[in-house]
Image (cartoon, rainbow over all chains, first blue to last red; front, top):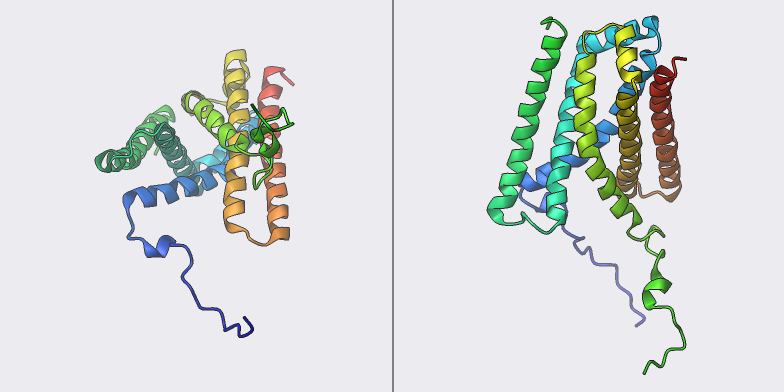
Length: 135
Length: 130
């Protein structure tokens, strides 16, 4: 065929903007975002371990960790860690082929979200008490 | 019965020739490290909370003690392997320029190895009292 016409603008495969936002979809995205954040948060963990080698270095680390920005990052890191861990358990359950029913999958993602917030708050209450009640 | 002169099954001929030339190896390793990460993360979080409010000497003693150090080294190894595979998937999904993708995948390998070995060195130094 000689007369090739201009290509028709066909729709591509359906993507995020096509679907109505659902909790399962949102939590899938959050799982990836938390993993992305944890990736860089590991720098803090390496800093913590390295800093423990000497009093001056450790003073610098605890100063940063105790600052408002440091605490904000650590709070985010704690939540991301717990959320990603619970999300990982959810995915491992799904890997076995279980938990895909309409009510089960909604329950799993809701438990993931609520569980991550509750556990983060509990850990921070314990952590702040360990620091001697100084907020 | 068989007319094929080959003893090898078709699986052997396609194995290792997936889009990433590694078949399901990464998929499986990501699950193995995910399973390992669960108890290791719980242990690491408990250990890190016990460090809060303590001075450097006490922190160094706790982190350097054999059991705690081994748990932390296992935690570091498992999460950094998991991190490398996870970030590679993110890069492959969103970076479509071939050169940039190669650079990003390489940087991902370097970053995870540097962070992992630095954290492990931090722990080992405390254990050996250097």
